[in-house]
Length: 340
Ligand code: PEP
Ligand code: MN
Image 1: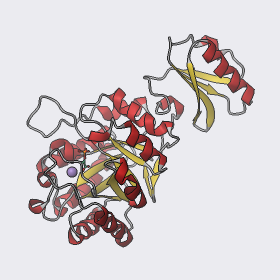
Image 2: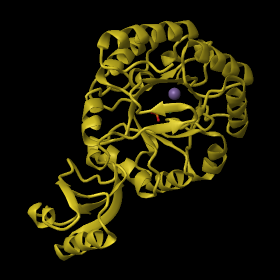
Image 3: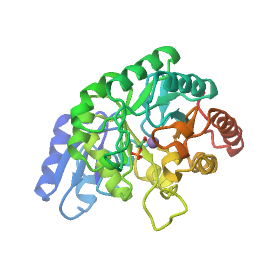
């Protein structure tokens, strides 16, 4: 439950609400909701709203749809806009994030960066530190890859999205990333979430491959609770009994996220499907479902890729898909365009 205060209410009104909550055996956390003070309540039995509605300075008492507090839509009904360089995620348009799974070489990254930019990507992705299922697989070039990403940004102007795999490499990643990715395997890593949040950089939080909506939002809550409000969620497919697809893209989470929280959500059809021929239909569906962005893997020579080659779009396929998405967004008539 969240108690929204009137903007002009004095501090003593806020203190009174906190005391009343504590007297009712609840935990009270003072937060900001749409620029106004608010008190988020948790723990104990849900209180009678009337107990708070009558207190001086209280504008409204709203029930949150779950245990999340700072992520609750009620605390920011207008939605959060996460700014990454000159790009706005959650501002109403669908932002295309593209690039290779992993940075493999100067030629591979710079070629891809220029091609995806030309085709309409607004952010460049590429892993320097790769979480792999097998310890014998390619785990990324590390620091040299970060240097190449910085160079790609310099040449193209595209802000960089790259993953922080652990706390040991976070410092290096932080220096280059404009948007720090936390991968599916680390969604439950509270220590990494907290440390990444404290960098102050925006965070792209991928859904754990077996996480419920509640677990996903509570992971976001770890970042928000550190005072970092710039979280972008990412649906990347979950584990189900289906075997026709690498994971199952759970698009139904997009409207559920928009209802429950003010945070933007992007969709990654590349990791979800694992096959490049399945990426375009799922990308179109994600746009139609209201995704605030798409994360797409692109590689100039996928057959030689050291990770996730089968799901990487060829540059020409990527360019055609962006054109298709632009045409689709015009027919959807929801005001959501593919960001230019
Ligand atoms: C990735 O984006 O390259 C990646 C490894 O994603 P995920 O954590 O969703 O598997
Ligand atoms: Mn990948």
